[in-house]
Amino acid sequence: MSHGDTVPLHPSSQSDIDEIENLINISAHSSVLPAKPQSPPRASIPISSSPFISSNIPQPSYQPQQQQQQSKPKPQSQSLPVPPVLPISNISPNSNGMSGFGSPVNTLTEPVWDTVKRDLSRIVSNLKLVVFPNPNREDPGKALRDWDLWGPFFFIVFLGLVLSWSASVKKSEVFAVAFALLAAGAIILTLNVLLLGGHIIFFQSLSLLGYCLFPLDVGALICMLKDNVILKVVVVCVTLAWSSWSAYPFMSSAVNPRRKALALYPVLLMYVSVGFLIIAID
Amino acid sequence: MDESYTSLPTSHLLGSVPAVISEEKKTTDSAEARLQIFPPNNGGEKGRGYQSIGSSNDGEEQQATNNWKGVFNISSYIQYFNVDTDIVLDRIKYSLYPINGDFFRKIDANPDLYGLIWISTTLVFVIAALGNCATYLMDRHTDKKTTWSFDVNYVNVAAVAVYGYALLVPTAFSFMLQYLGSNSSLVRFWCMWGYSLFIFILSSFLLVIPVEFLRWLIILIAGSASSCFVALNMRSYIEGTDLTMVAVASFILQFALSLFIKIWFFP
Image (cartoon, rainbow over all chains, first blue to last red; front, side):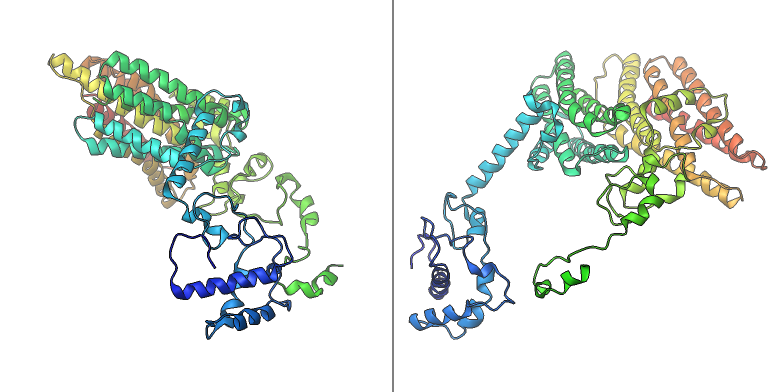
């Protein structure tokens, strides 16, 4: 049976795949089959019920064996464990690229560019939510529903690299200090909010503090390209204010209003120290 | 009624959930009504770090001993951060007056570690940053041709010195007092030493001025104010016993820190 796969299968696996597909087709022959023949039908497969209840699944397996020309010596032990393994998964059959044999591995077999593009688009959308003015700012819970840690990682490493390039001496120490300051700082700031009795999700907060570094990244890049002290001070002040403004609603709403300043002051301290590093690195 | 559920033939199936968890919450509710345990908890909860259980305890029972849930559990440290903005500002202002010796009485009910952590962190940043500025200005004063160079090593030295001092000295004093017989509370020592560092932050801004005599004057004033604060508080803490050496030692150590800051960072 052809699956439309472009990957050539080992000849012995073809028979197994044929058996299993026959199994599915036979046990689900009364249900409506989807338009694409590759994905197995979903909720109608009776194998989702518990294996302890005696079902009629083993019986149909004898039929394909009689029908198949190349029957394997141990198909029974193979076919019984296999049906419960086929999950009723939710991967849509319209995924681009190859669908593979079992539907849950679709994202594993998609092209790398698709995966990268999906992550990049998530980073961009998170960035737009956090850093740029948008109508959702009043509700910080919506701010980063779909948080991820790739964006913060890129921004922190980029800032460390830019500072390291700008430095004329002790480049590796500068990178180490910047990276340690930002990474440890994000963790400590989150812990600070938790210790003050606030309610935030740890990784969502790490993610948000990382995304709020984006303006400082831009500022550091400008300062690296143009080496004038007055310009540096102005640029750093502007980007510092921008970063603080984007982090403010999230942090301030996470704690009791009487402790708002206690939660916000360390954020300000971290951004000011990073800003000072940007200005001071020559 | 519970038993009949467990006797159904499907209860041994894969993934079956037990029908009813026997709830003892009703009886514990009255005993712990003051603790505001958030539902759903079946009695003791572990590891839910986001719940502010500590905040409802103050004034009603001993705060120091009941909420310890292990070293790696955040909720056991929440009790030490139970302060509001105005309380922290009040304590900071109080630390600037070296003469009153009753800081311990002020923080007795509610010692906090927020002051220690963030004052020492601010101090690290301030002396690293302003130390660079001050070194540059002083070199410019003597030799007109020096250019600005940022020595990132200042951050490392500042971090080691300030964090080491703020963490180790109170620990050493606490252990020494316990060894010598009287009781001591480590958290309160940390709190007091942490707030005593605040005056160095203010003086660091003044130490940027590149006049040597002025720098020495400023650091002498700030150092002695801070050392008096520490020594007088220690003396009032240990009063009744014959341990004035402890107060003198704390004075000397604080003064040594101030001299180190001046000599290394603001030459």
